[in-house]
Length: 197
Figure 1: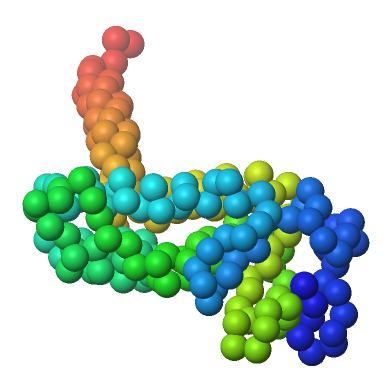
Figure 2: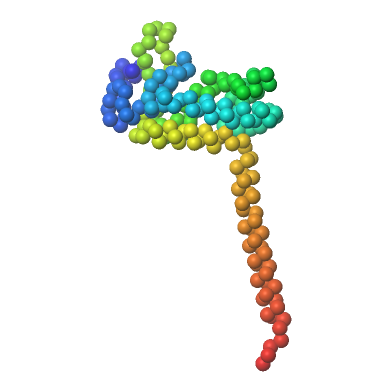
């Protein structure tokens, strides 16, 4: 692959290699919607699998369209999934591939994937070239795992994490109030006792 503007071969920012190397995280074809190389090639399906699992749980419960996720692209995927869901095929969920790939690219960016900043010439014939997102990383496995973990966080509907934190904080606050009240009562009793001298 070459930089479309300079014509120069694209090099790995870590080892200088012009081809496949241990730092290659993902070669994502955003035109034909596929991952054609890099560490992510063998695990790319994990993104879709995690989204399908989360959506199917909600769809099986008949969750209303009002559910909001922590990402606008997930909201778009959810709306598409709901619009195309059928009770006759309750174990299947439709995922809009274009939105899915946009989400994956964003997740890799947020997880410290090193994306090539320029426009890439993939060597395709006129009319058959693709828009490519090229990612490298010092540790591709670590970045990929981070992206999957970030997706899992985003797949928790808004408000759920907040309410969980509240349930752990409130008992602590009430216990502190009880301790302060008990200390105050003891101090009042001591002050009300007549002096023995």
